Length: 104
Image 1: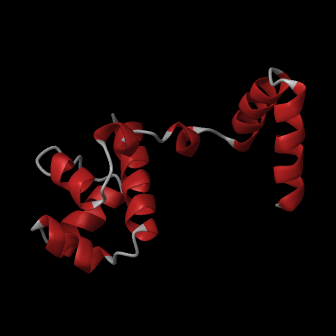
Image 2 (image 1 turned 135 degrees about the vertical axis):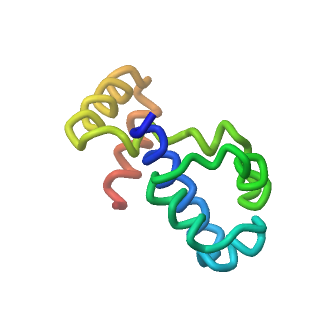
């Protein structure tokens, strides 16, 4: 559960930052204090009472809040998963991925 709380907190922070919200503004929109937002984002508390409101304020679904597998993987695990996915792509998609990676 600790890893889930931490990963969920990181994901919420990531989505909040993408929306351009400070912790203070986010807390205001949620109707909680900034310290509570900090505790959620640090993985100290699970936002069971505010989870639906968080999704609403961030304009996302609950499923997207829990889309954080990439936050829990090591670099080598991510590379392995990427390699597996890429090796299964048809040639035309492989070329697109190559072009995208070259742009990074």
